[in-house]
Length: 245
Image (cartoon, rainbow, N blue to C red; front, top):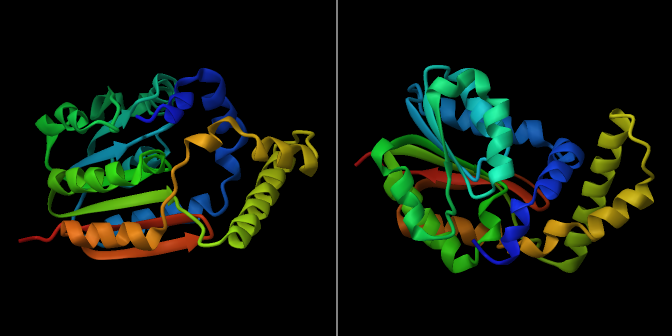
């Protein structure tokens, strides 16, 4: 975990994100649907999955809704986030294990190796907090945890190519957050939301990399069928499969 990433261990930030940001992420439902379509395209049920940087468990919840017999491990270094995941998935407690582990260090794999290999490994808005060198190492660790034919899907915050594109994205996200607050009947002006967005606590924890570069890393590691399956400005769904042989 980077020093900047420690901010995600605070209860206040976690609640601010879950209550005021998560629901305003543009095309969040579509991104989850893309993930599920890719998982289904394997043509076989999910027996074991890993949710890396699980947050409040929304990706695990989606997988279990389609594969209720699956067993999963949810990993996060934030105790408040892991607590939220346990609460959200309390009805599936017998199928799940929760690990308070920092995947910023290679030793994190020791917490999951007894349950390997995995059919599917997913991650949502988590790996971008790692330096690029560590991102690439982590992708290699994920590759080794997958079954032959296993799938890795990363729903991630990625870098814009220019400052202008970044500014367009920022305004798009702010509009989406404003609409979300309107639907919740929370009285906040767009100007207020824009100010909060510009000075959000977690901003400095972001270490963004272009999705094209990250797909290149996956190919170099040995993943096949690597692609960016969905992208809207700085949010991308990408990944690949471990070859069957």
